[in-house]
Image (cartoon, rainbow, N blue to C red; front, side, top):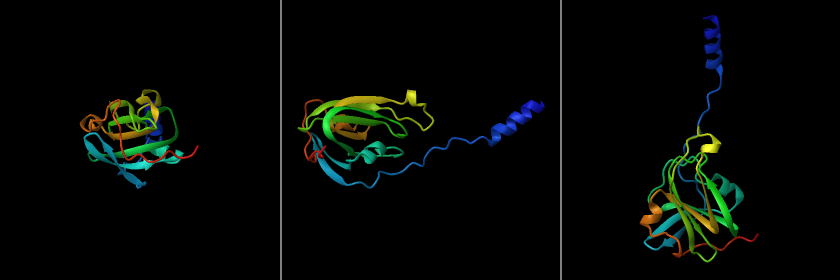
Length: 156
């Protein structure tokens, strides 16, 4: 009985993991892209810190909005859903503006999700667009189509 009371007192004092506060879409430079069936308003993550933060802790994305990740070169890029609170579509695009692959309806991960269970998706390109889940299909984004309005790639 005393051991149970002591254990209860110790556990009551242990720090409880706290999720980071959910936020709205960050204030990064924005631009308008043209998909086959829609115009998209995207914020641009063009440097390593912006790309690393991405859409972490964002609680909602209105239709036809998202984030454009701009890389210095065309390559294979992995995206994981660490602290991503909403399901997303991920669209990889080559340096010519052609969609190379789409990961549809990638499930979100709560802050309590162990790292080894966080969804990861891979693709090849110079750009990646993240949109609300289901948006890529609605907007006509599929392998082989062209996306207009992409910014130039930064120097390496």
